[in-house]
Each structure stands twice: as C-alpha cells, then as structure tokens.
Length: 373
Ligand SMILES: Cc1cc2nc3c(=O)[nH]c(=O)nc-3n(C[C@H](O)[C@H](O)[C@H](O)COP(=O)(O)O)c2cc1C
Image 1 (cartoon, rainbow, N blue to C red):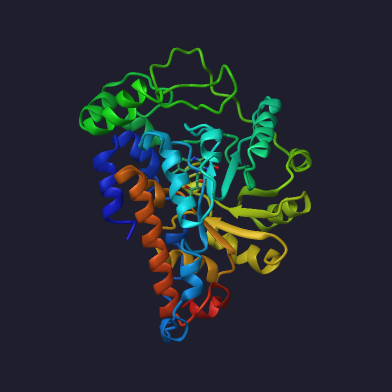
Image 2 (cartoon, rainbow, N blue to C red; image 1 turned 135 degrees about the vertical axis):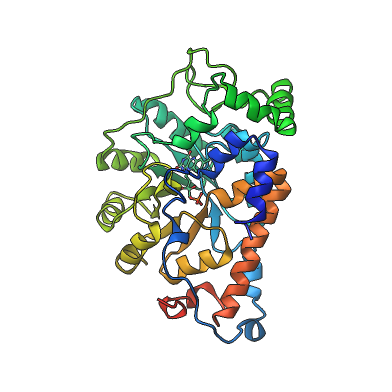
C-alpha cells in the first residue's frame, strides 16, 4: 500500500519541507480533491479471473495501465530523482514524464531509453518554450504533454508554514527541518553540490536556471503565459510530430476543444489539488468525458492514485490510462530507484489482484458493471 507506510518513510528520509512539497497535503484544505475522495468505494465481488487466464496478459505489461506523470521537485527528494524515476519506469515498461522544472537534463533522461514523455509549461516568452519543444523532438521523446492548468501559480499555505521556497531563502523553519534530516542534507545538497551540482532547474533557458542555493535574485522565475489560448495549442501541434497530450483538462468542453485543436490525448487533472484547493475531482470529470470522447482521443486521469484499486476504478469509469504523481514520489523519497521500483510493483500487483477479484481478465473488460455505484 502506497498510502500508509511509504509516505511516512518518505517524510522520515527527506526534509519535510521538500517531502511535504512532494506530498502537497494542505492542512488548510485537507486531502486534495482527487480520485480517493469520490465514490465508487467498492467493486463488485466476482469470480476470480486468475484461475481462468493465468493473467499472462497483465504480467507481460508489467507495470499495468499507468505511467509516471510530471513532478517538478523530484530532484529535491533524491539526488537526480528524475533519473531514478525514468530508469524505474523504463525497467517496468511504463512511460515517465519529465517535467519542465525538473532537475535532471532532458538529454540524461532521454539516454535512459524506454518510453519518455516531456511535459511543457508555456512561458510568456514563448520562444523559450518552443526551444524546449525542439529539444524534446530531437531527443525523440515519445509524447509532449502540455500542461494548461498552472498559469496562475498556486496558493500553498503549507509551504509558507514549512519554510519551503525555491530558490531557497534562509529561514529558521527550513534550517531546523534540514538539521532533522541529515541524510537528506548530505545526499541531496552537500554530495550533489560536490558531484552532479546543486539541484537546479537545469532545462530552463539561460538566465532562468535557478538553483536551490541561496536566492541571489539573479535568476527570476520565467513567467507563465497566463493568456494561453487554443491557438497556442494549434501552433504547438505544428511543431510537434508525435503524440500530443493536454494535461489539466477539467470539463467536457475543454476536452472537446483540445481534441479539435490537435491533441491525441487529454489528462483529466486538477494538478493533484495543488493549484486550486476546491476544484472538482478528476474522477467526476472522467464520468462526463469518457462516454463522449473515449475512442477518439486517449483519455487519461490523475490525482490521488495510491493503490491498484484506484487504477481499476479509473479504468472502469472509462479512462484509457492513469498517471501517478505522489505514489512514485513517496517511493523515490523513501529509497530512491529501488523505492520507485517497489511502488510500481505494488501498484501493478494490486491492480492485477483487484482485476481478478472483480472477475475481469484484461483491462478492456472493465466497465461500470464492476463498480458499486
Ligand atoms: C511535487 C509535485 C510537483 C509537480 N510538478 C508538476 C509539474 O512540474 N508539471 C505538471 O504538469 N504537473 C506537476 N505536478 C502535478 C502532477 O503531474 C499530477 O497532476 C498530480 O501530482 C496528480 O496527483 P497525485 O500526486 O495525487 O497522484 C506536480 C505534483 C507534485 C506532487
């Protein structure tokens, strides 16, 4: 189970400001609005499919119908955290999405092989974002994931309380926190500083590459394009030759528009509840989008997936694929590459078992009939 022991281990190991950043739990708002909050709660008890099929089809797709979504702060949870995530995903045969603010270079992650996707934020100075698209294209990333729900930034009171800021500004809470996590301090900051370099947004354009070290005020955050339009997506479509995915879609109208403007897939997502704290649950949006658009575009969903049964519920409601955020970050923060391997294995096993419990042999057999709605 990813939701109990692993987050606790992650918090013990990583500085709590960085792991709360990974966890994104906001005491003010409680758990993010996500898959776990909504019905359906239970699956229909069924005959075991394991005995009928041996579940070979599931074993061959080892990781199950899920991939690792973009999480910008992975390099703060573990030294070269994105590399560990990419390697674990490649070993499991599932996609890994490298986030725009990631701390490992696009080239290093592309060299891992496997199924690498690239997540793009559109900046006000769009030429910088276009350069990233060209780089991802030349590095053969399999898909481009354009995130549309983060232009306005966020309201994260928990980060005000726990002293987390990027780039780092000295404050008592953060220093106390670091002193309590010496292994993290040694590995992610000191050792990295002496070897691969202090965590920084290494893929940002020159002049914007903020490092975790003291904020000198020399590297501002690249402003997001808050006036992004569907025309921007059309332009990106002309630049990107492979699969194009729009992430952060939260209603049927936008899902339709994304498809009409060239998207091959959408990710129904509220950013893990990290942007607006009272948004709808993506699972509820899925109920509307999948019946309308399923089959014409790839419908993906994320938010609150912590167990294999969460994956199953999403697929039963019509999702083609599920993306993971914190589930694999917990594994990463607790034990690096082996922790991510473990998280993927746990989710895959739980998904397989739950499939058997509801009497389905393959994901395509899942449907609303297995849910107690
Ligand atoms: C620490 C952290 C960093 C994130 N960074 C990004 C990012 O850079 N780009 C992006 O599109 N989404 C980002 N997300 C959102 C995730 O891709 C995803 O939508 C969300 O985490 C799903 O919810 P879950 O964590 O409950 O699985 C981030 C999420 C977390 C927890």
